[in-house]
Image (cartoon, rainbow, N blue to C red; front, side, top):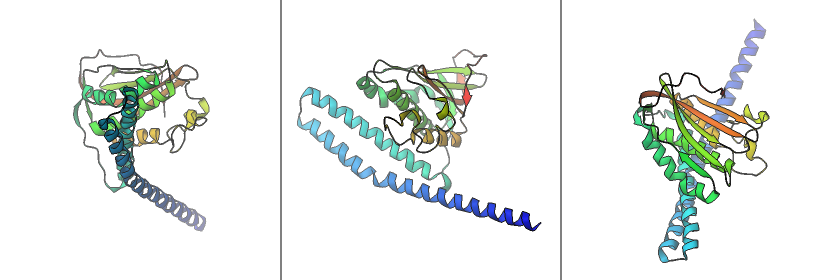
Length: 257
């Protein structure tokens, strides 16, 4: 009995230490998300003013791409700040949402960047009504599409499509990039895990962590399948309220993470 009490006490102490560390990280992310907004806003204002004052057409194009990138960065900082509030009672506001409205915003966020990268971006109409929080769903899809574009590169292709499965809608974000090595699959959603980007230094590895945590809050399962040198498909499963898509009985093999 004494041994059991000692073990129980150690487990409780470890739990409290882990909780304190998690809370400290959440506060750090909240502060970082807040403090970094100001320089981002200054940069956006400076770029916009430079374009308005008159520059060559090629320079204007590059500055416009830079401005769009800064806007996306601002949105990602908002995502980080929002997730840091998860333990402070943040709750999704789920409601009936026309998915095409969300997809059109994601397309607008990434279209110019995809063209600059030489990547073909094909976001297909869904024709579906789903039960979700539109802002949080856009966070998920924006991160997945951005990752797919970065890993497809020049002459690559990214396709966002939807398929009906029973009473759910599956959104597939598919790329034809280098794929994810098997050794990384088990931890691709871990914070600061850059996986296939590790050698290039591309990003901090927070995108998929944001995807997973946001999806958990919405209770939208995330699935991933990947084949090296062929590409990856990340899928989001949402409750379907209405759709003109045909029912899909046989689902492609996926791996759940």
